[in-house]
Length: 191
Image (cartoon, rainbow, N blue to C red; front, side, top):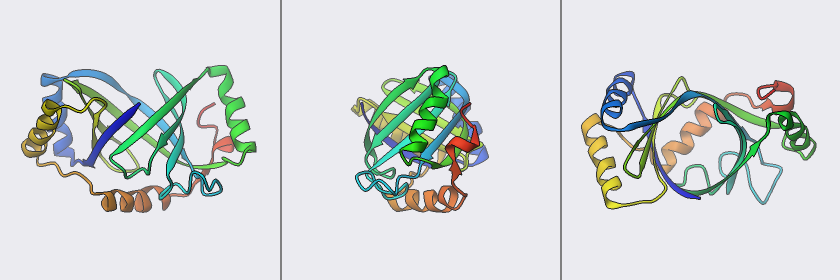
């Protein structure tokens, strides 16, 4: 599925105001703690490294389960295709072991508390307690004029700013990459 994502920072005050607004105007579709590890893929030339590569591989765990995911496109691109495979609980350790043996050993851990709301075709995520800092994501899976208008309205109403491609790359470098990568197998985050 192809998606378009706009992201930007949120102050504590903006988090409170945006969540209050979304609770009144939207539909809460998810509220949970999410664990994600983004694999360092520098040893895979077809993918490239975590920050500048052409795709991003990750393991994601939330209330719905654990997923092995690839997002095609550089992480700072607005439009990317996402492919997920749900991993059964009893297969997670085996998958991590296999990925480790294939050379996907290290990654960047990004836990976050996530609230997703839906208004029309727009999904608005408010992420807090995150390595990347408090931030929002506007996700469009089926772009339309009303969603674009809503994004403009939210930006003006709450004084939001969208990270440019370079700002997002810098954020990845400063807040994710500067934190040490972990060995996925040894960390036992998913088992």
